[in-house]
Image (cartoon, rainbow over all chains, first blue to last red; front, side, top):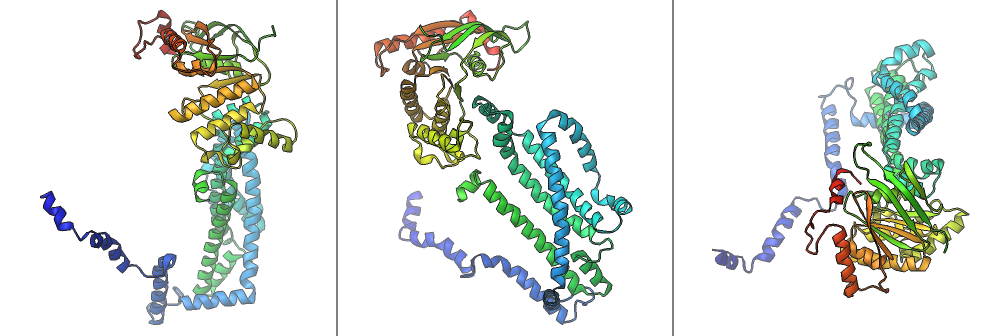
Length: 283
Length: 256
């Protein structure tokens, strides 16, 4: 039986070898490459537009893509979008700067000393259990409805991920590397600079990415509290006038901001963590 | 004679409290300047504990140990900092200016034939390259005492042979006192001036190895010493446990 099978295949192997790839090639769109993954979203948008024009979707519920594009263009040209974007970015930047300062200081103190851990860690773990967005009523009572509340909300949400990952990263430093540093005659401070902090960096950068995500979330919530400027204000204001096109523009801006912040941290990681095997192989 | 580099008297180390036999029991040891000593023992015999004590990584709780200030360790795993390029790992902690440290590091890397990998990230090195980097990092400090903790154990057989001869040449050139912890009898005979066997917390053998260098395994004297050391380790020629020496009884209870 095997012998006859062999003879049956003789003369055919090239055909068989080519069979599978050609089967797949028939279903591949030539020349599209990575663009292939945009096919479905584009189709959905076209479908959305068609449904709106056929009167299937009310503009009061959801504006058609064409109206959204027009609204976006008008907001950009009039400078309105730029103004609100700048206000929002400023809130995130200040809040995040406070969060990084606080998270890094607390993480260093708790991570590098037992006393610091006892003093800080349990307290922060308890505070972390509070959903910080639920603090909004208190913050309004304490700080009013001005910029301070919005910035503090961003800072509060972003501090914890930075603290937690830095603390964890410091504590998971390989003790064997610390021993190596000791026999090389490094001082305590040198061990922290050359061994502990670089070892904690990968985790801390993951924390930074989390913090950015939380910061946008806090911003969305914060900007819906009686704001007079900012992307959140733009969205709330548009709601008053049933401008669903402007609301969607606001949502798209939030999405783009989150996406670009993530890309920024990824770029930072590629630079700072160039030594890691996965990145080394790519390079 | 010059003063010895290492002087150990009555060194005792316990991990399990006074009722259990100590890991190191009143050890006396002297290592002369430029002397290459191999310390043999089974797993868990306490040989790594003795090395760590001399390295200053484990405390001296009973007895006395005098070691030089300038000492360096090569561990079984290379223990390189993955976020520093190879030459920076070698230069880490060197005194003097940055340029001076870099020059020294590059010279040390040239000695272990790794000049071409100076700018590489440690995680891209092969096992042998990483261990050579570790060796360069130790030698660049011009140690009076070089402590080698089974530095070849994790390498493949061919790489190990190359590393052994490299270590032999470098030690001949720099003449530090060396303590090599190993469980490989042939390695000890190829490299050392003196072989110690640690068992049951005691140094049960102290054998000078007067063989001419370079040493050859085919040398009948080499073979005789090999059998003698294997006997001291409680293993016969075929690798079976020899009639148990009472000293090994206490051996299995503690972790190295």
